[in-house]
Amino acid sequence: MAVGGPPHEAAGDAEGSPEPGGRAPAIRPFLLTAGRVSGGGAALPMPVETQVVSTSAGLSVLHALTFEHHDIVAACRRPQSVAELAAGLRLHLNVVRVLAEDLCAAGHLTVHRPNAGIAQDLSVLRRVIDGLRAVPDSRGTLRDTS
Image (cartoon, rainbow, N blue to C red; front, side):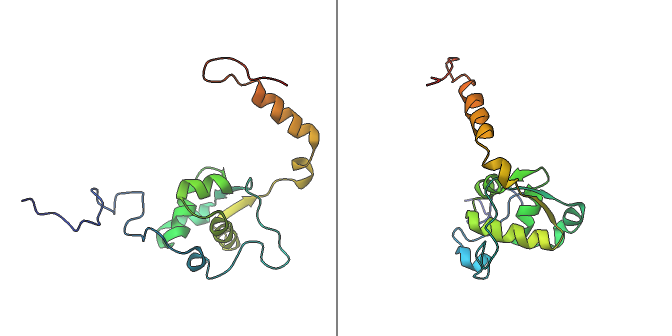
């Protein structure tokens, strides 16, 4: 019988792995945010299409950040939306919103909120719909334009 590490350890060494090791599979969202919710008070919640990207200051202190803060800054080396970030890290959307706001306040992330006027412009929405209809499906046929 081969002798190995405890069954909860990953096959690879956690030091060289980009994935966090040993995290509980289901941590309650309110524990990650200390009970805070995004958009609490007068502030509106960060829209899901908000783009976030790590700052050089955030990347320079990456080794000192803990758990989800580290994961968020590391994942934001390239700009991505809050929704993409939450899905990629498998975290609740509101948890990512709160933590991203914290990281922005600390200077570790830059947050680019969409222009609300453009987001509600019907001509922009029409162009997006037309563009999506122009993309062929997996069989190479165009979608119905009606």
